[in-house]
Length: 262
Image (tube, rainbow, N blue to C red; front, side):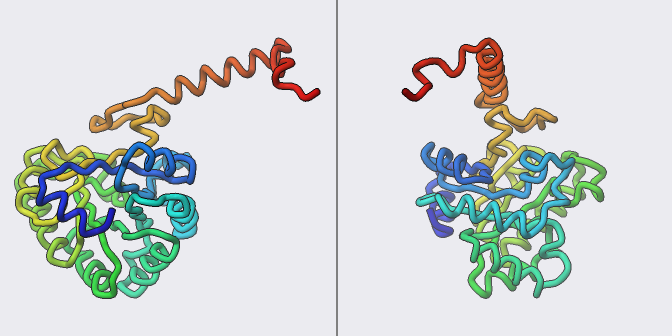
């Protein structure tokens, strides 16, 4: 999978499935399932580190997890999130940190924000760093947004998001994540842009969809957004397995003769 394939998928009207991964084990499994794009998301702050939001995730965190995923992936395209305050302070800082993520093995970076980030995107793409944008409910702005709320419901907000999407496309982004916006707005933005849109709570009309791996596997249940569909029940299976293990140890059933050396 390459950056150019995103455009081909859109031209062919083929939907693209994207999943997050944060370590080598799950990255291998995700790729074996045929997933073509893996996002090393700063969502790791919540599902891996147990934090209430993504704001505490550092560049060192992202570099570490990007290396884990990129080190085992053979065919899928790896995109790494730029964490909070790794690109907002200046264009120079944004370039430096985006370059570090590519050196860690990512093929592209993702950053949040609208037209205000156009100069960062232009600077990155001009030196060969592919950039994916992110509009709508942007988790790094959770404090300013007053929580994890649907964006773009009001006409003026919808118009601003559409204009932001056009600006991000013009700045050189190869794709755009749309999070927690009305489905009709997702459709309008998708049909307006020539670059691919990847939805997460943006309706069925986007060019692709992305979900957090731990959400779709039923591992993370601290809260479950409306846009999440659970495809597995790994938390329940894990609890059952651990409970059986504990009981067998306590009852002297494990290890048995077959798990012992002679």
